[in-house]
Length: 178
Image (cartoon, rainbow, N blue to C red; front, side, top):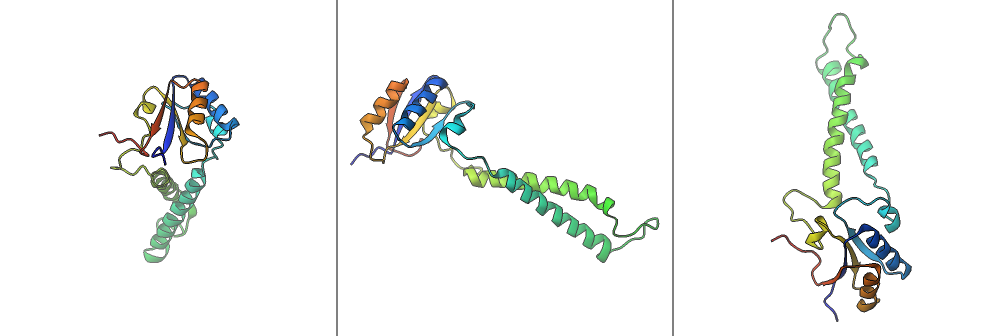
């Protein structure tokens, strides 16, 4: 049994990499992930990646922040320590708007930061997970899971036909920077 976990196709050109993705998909070979040094338009649709749900999380955190500060300000200014300022009522909603707005933004920002770190496993202090160190510099990498039933030689030949400069067989899941 082979110890190869991933087959990496290294490309110089993003168009050749997109052609490589098409070749693999035509032959029903599942692609584990694609690593590029820059954003490529249309790659999400080609790989079938769903839209992010972070917007829903942002809305929920914003609502939570608005509810929390509105409750605090209401309790403080109406029940705990009501003050008569110029004959105005204690529960005047226009007075609550600035606090509510600012806390909505604050909760949304912090909540989105924590949600992003949790969703991507990029916690501060954690070593980055990289398939090939050149993927962050000048190479476009297609990673194919080698544990499938497709022979490795077939995957290698498909990647070479698409224009891969180099095809590597990784035994480890990720490369460390050390």
